[in-house]
Amino acid sequence: MSIFLQGIIVMGLAYLFGSIPFGLVVAKVWANIDIREHGSGNIGVSNVLRTVGIVPAIIVLILDAGKGLVPVLFAKQIFTNETIWLLVGICAVIGHTWSLFLNFKGGRGVATAFGMFISLSPKVIIVLVVLWITVLMISRYISLASILAAVALPIFLIIFKFPISYFILSLLLSSLVIYRHRPNIQRLLAGTEHRIGEKAR
Image 1 (cartoon, rainbow, N blue to C red):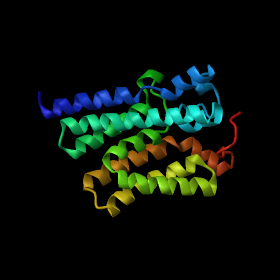
Image 2: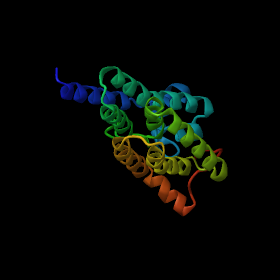
Image 3: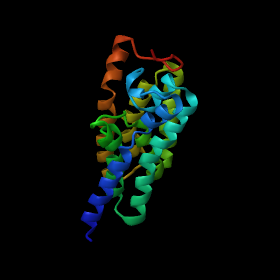
Image 4: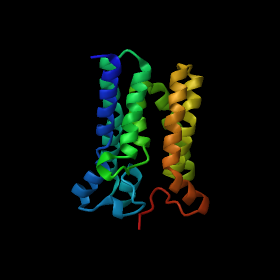
């Protein structure tokens, strides 16, 4: 089997794995609710935190990050080409944001992208986590912290002198994450975005 065909298969599997709606499953098991009918309607960590609580949110964070981490680690065992690793990770993020199992709807992709880069560049992740926590502590907006971390990702890849393929594909990934945060951006501008600690209605 050619490397090209192997890459397509692994990317397809990454998309399917990324499509698993862990937020929906955890909220259903933990609180017997459909998370899509509460709060922002999103299946991601933030809405689970506001709607269900901190413990299920941590579980969803770990599982959603794993959707980015596991496929990339798997790809690294098969391929030596770093661009393929990146593409596999991006496919997992796309699966999370446009899930096959949710009529091509899903989360914002932050946790899955976080897991993806744990396996690709831990030092960049450390810097982004510090940035994310700092913005969150100052603003108390999870969405704002996530958006600024997405903006910073390509910048720090350049600072740490990663290959140009990382920069180009990280631009794609960052654009995807910011695009998925459009409702949050609108609420931030309107002053109606939930701050951390506020319960969803």
